[in-house]
Amino acid sequence: MKAKNGFTLIELLAVIVILAVIALIATPMIMGVIDEARKGAARSSAYAYIHAVENEIAIQLTLNPSASMDSVVGSLKTTPDTSLVKSSAPTSVSLVIDSTGTVKDGSVITVSNYTFTMTNGELK
Image (tube, rainbow, N blue to C red):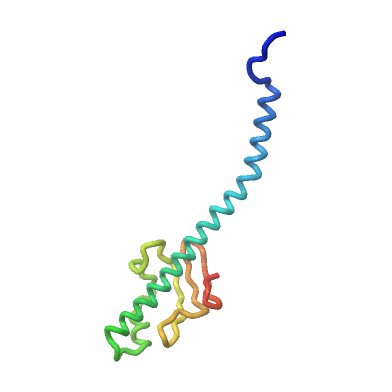
């Protein structure tokens, strides 16, 4: 009897088919994880921008205690200030700021093509 050296064509094709099926199943899952990671990074950038704006308001009120909240908020730029955050800067911002200088519900921020709205204190 002769010793077998290697694989037959059928065995190789079976392995290739199995690998192709695994790749077809795994690809959508991996793409979903990547998209969720991008969305999470954009959400983190939006939170960083909100905190930077709140901090800037607090600094301005500390440096000038006689200033009104309206004048401090009015002095903020109407376009997103990209220098406030080190991560991805927002491309569009509409903030609702209360009398304490806190960003409130109804605020809308767009970062990396993801638009988040502040609802119940969370960006969704």
